Length: 339
Ligand code: 5GP
Ligand code: MN
Image (tube, rainbow, N blue to C red):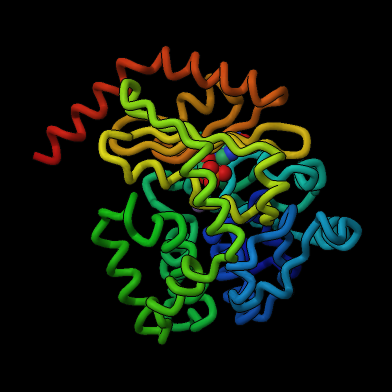
């Protein structure tokens, strides 16, 4: 990787559609690092990221394909290296996928999602790590560049690590994670301030939608150790939030005792977006894969459904029925482990 980046002159860093804190944190951390090495580097994202991330150093320089397809495709075409961060399949970058696959640049994947597809010449895939941003930190250190890691990179890395672990509340039992946070603090970052900026700067309308959602749109199915949230276009008409603002909704039911699987279904323009989360050994990515043409991690996955919300709900019912025994078994195991 070091020699690949050494030789590169024009590097494009790409993250997945609807970029989250890890996608944006990892790409921007690499961007700052490459710029400090004198490289011409550009971050290209398929579409916009949430406002709660717009303060990240470098966020203003990100090229959005959805806003300026011409520029995004031009920098992709001029790149000699394209670094794909926080995704494992061309499908995850939406309309950018074709340009990515067609590009003659050397492609490098830096990611933590299981089962990477073979579209990159060099694949650095570590599903055991809880964030791509943590992987970026490790790679920069492995290249012997800890001392060159800037304050800005450190802020971006910490943001990615923090968002992909829900503020270090899940997938966050690796002692090395905290060693890395310690090293980032040495760079001068303010972890508490990052937490506040990421999690405590939501809009009022989002908070009110949460109230409506938990009261009227959430079914708690203790017989399945599960909860299901459905938000339709009507809900969004009444509470007009931006797309990225539903981030975190799917995790909320997991704070109910006995609930180890949460499904969130959101009616988008032309499809139903499905987000799944689980606690412990229940693999929610199997549900995403089998029923919603998606995938992801054991405890955080998602997919899509092209059809009506009623059909999507029926499909989820089938999935719950199929997985009921395993859900209840996983809940028992969680309870045993907590004793
Ligand atoms: P989220 O629920 O935050 O949108 O996604 C959580 C995780 O699920 C993502 O990091 C990604 O691994 C996976 N994921 C979400 N949507 C899809 C999808 O449509 N296809 C695939 N393969 N994975 C998805
Ligand atoms: Mn990630």
